[in-house]
Length: 290
Image (cartoon, rainbow, N blue to C red):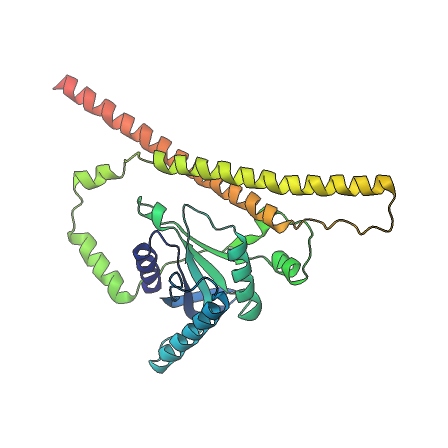
């Protein structure tokens, strides 16, 4: 829980910029990771634009130095993955895929990426995803294959279990026994202001659908070139290069993620709407009886 609070603090303080960091902890076997510490990566937004390679080296040196300092104070210094803030659920990108691939191939096959959405969390629901590339996706990228893979099988979701230290649990139990929730706090949970998020999701969904259409046009252009070459029987000409599939598959996966989020938003909104309607009707009946 302490590591998560550090991630939340870093992501919220850095808005509107999206940030990354490292996850430290232990591997307890059977693919289970215990994340105990996290620290942010250095901000490279103020660096010179043509010094990308230098920034990568500096970030790597910073990570190694941080792990060395943690080892000196007997803290867990084993890197088990990384985290990144995301904006309204956007995660299925080439950057995330390539970065996670490097962690799973160079660090450990069990390395994970923790994705935190500060915008949606500020609305009242903790939005936290833990992902790992599937073995099929890792094999395809390692072999530089252009084969088809189901978009839903690019990333696999890893269950998250939040654990508080004993002293924190004791404090929460003591606080919950003495704290009385006011009626205003209870009514805040019936807030129906999900329209801005739904509008943004629809806007982004349209944008991603347009991107998917662009990827489909690339395949259509390739098919036309191939058919034209076969028709002319020009055996000496080189075959047109097949477009890479992964970008389109990532877009399809992100579209599905948006659809799932919109389904969850509308489901919660309908439940709140029915509950608010029932309370309103009960209040009207009580006024009539009075």
